[in-house]
Image (cartoon, rainbow, N blue to C red; front, side, top):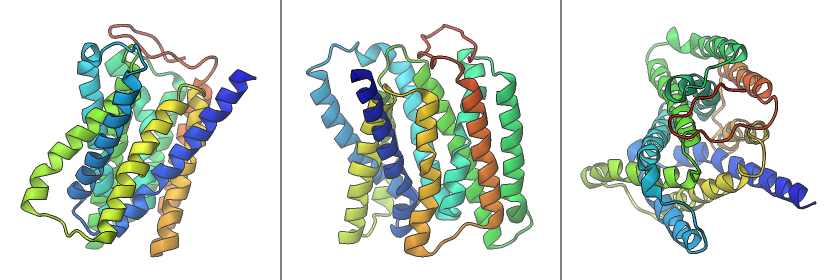
Length: 307
């Protein structure tokens, strides 16, 4: 009964995290700030939130010191900081649907990057999923490649969104390489890096501050990123990786719906078709990859094939 209760709590946490993540596209669209200011300001608030919770947690924890895992924490932080900045930038150049659907190619990239960085050799279904992702990308870019003017801007946004998926895949690999690591440590490092990167922009082009902008930044920092990080760290310890991925798939569904409901922005038919192919590829590789218990985090230097 206790295990079932823990599983249900984990499922609820992942679901809540995905719902909070899904609101990012809407608030990025509504906030008339430079992308770097949005990413940096949101991360500065989230860093304060996560640091406060981390200090409270360490008082009741005997976890190993983060200094022993610093290289991987830094690598994961840099990858996640790049993920956040590129995702915000992509949302300013392309539709929210394009940005989130292209970012959700991350699990496939994680399998390929894990082969190079952690010695985890991809199986046949990972290569098949990559072929499906490429096919989805060709559908995605079909209209943008033949468009000019605003189409060129959209194409840049789509490419940046795809890069965000690559960065997110690398971030997940670095987390898996940490021995007894806490995902919040890399997330905290990422927010500090992101905030520091945006500091010159705040000095050179200070944003207009009003009730709307401060409210949006407060929600994104404390709730949409800060609280979501805690929910993810809580849930991922209680449900299998495949189950967490399946639950989180509600994010790319809700993200464009929030934007459409408030701003009227709707994705093109090609974007929806390409995004559907990408999501199916991710589900395809994830379901076939979960044949047995989910893999434990890799220790540095240890090599293992993906099950």
